[in-house]
Length: 147
Image (cartoon, rainbow, N blue to C red):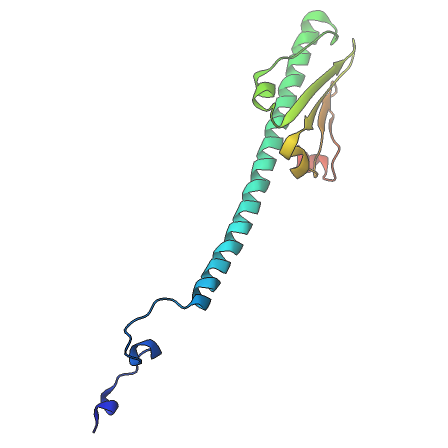
């Protein structure tokens, strides 16, 4: 028996006598493609979560504005001239503009998305709340989805 019969079943790379070679270009391209697809999906999910989190923060800030308006009303028996300057609105001023509008017996406060938040959050758009606690939105989603 010759030495050829003693060869073990090895990879084609080893039989050529060149030793173990690295990855082929096609293998490397497949790995890069898989990583790119995973990164795209992960970034999209991350962006959606950040948008939803900012929306929830704006909704909470609107409720805080409403509480301010109710405290104002209990001491003055009017919503007029109430100007809530709350920390939550300052924290979110890069993403939402908060606009209070009031008369003696009513108020409406809106949170209008700006910059990237406006382009990403078409589902809910502008959020609003009034003196009866009615919550509104201008986007394509439902009030339950947005609040």
